[in-house]
Image (cartoon, rainbow, N blue to C red; front, top):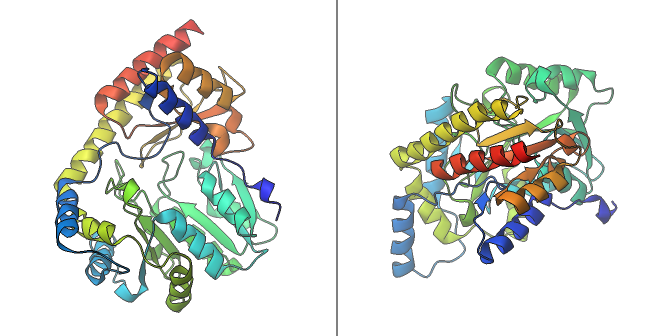
Amino acid sequence: MNPAAVQPFHAMAISRRAYALEAAGRSVIHMEFGQPSTGAPPLAIAAAHHRLDSEAGGYWESPALVERIAQLYAERHGLAIDPGRIILTNGASPALALAIAALFAPGDRIAFARPGYVAYRNAVLALARVPVEIGTDASTRFQIAASHLEALPDAPQGLILASPANPTGSMIDAPGLAAIAAVAKRRGIRIISDEIYHGLTYDAPAHSMLEFDAEAIVINSFSKYYSMPGWRLGWIVAPPGSTELLRAYIGSLFLTPPTLSQHAAFAAMDETEVLEGYKDTYRRNRAHLIGALPGLGLARIAPPDGAFYAWVDVGDFTDDSMAFCQQLLTDTGIAVAPGIDFDPVDGHRFMRFSFAVSEDRTRLAVDRFAAWLKQR
């Protein structure tokens, strides 16, 4: 593999510039990253303080947290998951790397949607596997469909799905997931389901791929719904028979996740009222943003069924989304992600807003953006 093939995350360059402007006294609205601005819920913070005061901590995997995660699958999806299949990780990104490294061989082809999360492409490349990007558009709600898999002349060894997805927020419904699972089984394609945005849906609930494929590799995290991105804690639901292999990899590469984070996460899982309150804020931000953008000449928006993103076609204003986002930041203080991070083919005419910020910041961003576009 050519190391130069792994491209930088351009939103990080935007963010560095945004923080530099902020340090210089500018008013900046951070909508460039997919992270809640709320912080961990109160019970999680209290649990962390208690543990800091009462124990030193060490290499450890919480049996109670693993049991509680298994219970979550019963509550949300009616699934009885053996807790022995649940492996705690240092976040969803290491979980993805572990799944690719342990369960796929160098040279294996792994497919995913374009637009899609930048780390899918880069993790596959960095681990000497071969990315197969499947172009999607509004006709399939910017999601992979069974017909895409049927159309591939050579079946890939793997498929990464995300529903809700980043950067679009769009979802795949139950019949769509069932159809994908059926084609994947017939063609020998192993599925990795990135379910990091589960819990953050605004109409219909998200379905787990485990409802349709008992051998799917499922990845999740405490970063999004539980509002704990900086705590670096996630998990894998391992396919039957692969638990020990995955544990061997994680033990060698990462040891265990942070002890403190595990205590905090266990408390966070019962903060339902607080967490649903956070989601209500995102819901209102979503309504305001997607309600305002068409009036600014930006009517082509992917359907944000979940997560906290608006994937917006700005092709009527620019053919260089990176330059567009850089100028927007310089002129208005609004930091957003350029589409080229998520789609190296058509991303030059898209940008992604993250609306996981406060309501007043979202409204201020819309006002600044509207004035800026009017000037242009």
